[in-house]
Image (tube, rainbow, N blue to C red; front, side, top):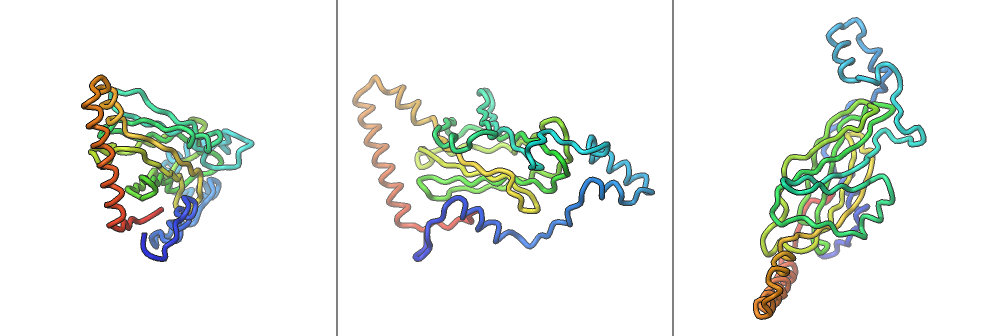
Amino acid sequence: MSEGEEARTPDEIVDHENEHESNYKPPPEKTIEEILQIDQEDESLRKYKEALLGQAQTGPVVVEPDNPKKVIVKRLVLVAADRPEIALDLTGDLSQLKKETFIIKEGVSYRIRIEFIVQREIVHGLKYVQKTSKMGIPVDKMTHMVGSYAPKTEIQSYTTPPEDAPSGLMARGGYTVHSLFTDDDKNEHLKWGVDFRNQEGLERLKFLAGDEKVLSKLFKYYLASNLISFYMLYLFEIHLQPF
């Protein structure tokens, strides 16, 4: 962090990103009724609109009448090969997610599946933005273009491309991930945060627990590596583009 720069909360980081996005201007938002009325004499366009709108062309699609949102994010699922899926319920009290630490194996390849409902109107340019930090220092940021979706009564989903979990000595430990589900019009559909931890180091400690000498050496090695990590962060300023 540069001199004079104040620490920002996750909310301020997201606001900062919204202020500094590209100059891309999304087209004016149109209702389903307006889309249906455009170029009705064009047969090919009419068929395209029918395919795009699906259920919505016959009338309003409202899945949760008491919820005014157009996009309702239901779950986030962590999908890794040969491992049980880890599902996070995003419909309740999101502050409870911070009370748990989710375990992921070091270096494993995984995907993230986001399950959501679109109701009332078409939503344009959905985006999933994810910012990862370690010890309060930003270490990674990803933006996934999810796409545009018409209202449906069924749950719709988007799965990210494969990513590799952090690996190596310097990458071990706990991480905090702040996620944002937004769109071209900068609507904030949902924002949440979770903590996760690499599993590899814990498995090795358990395996070596029967040998006190090896365990003692491993602990000293682990302590020294963390001191080195803090010293490196002290020496070098890390400037990463925030949300």
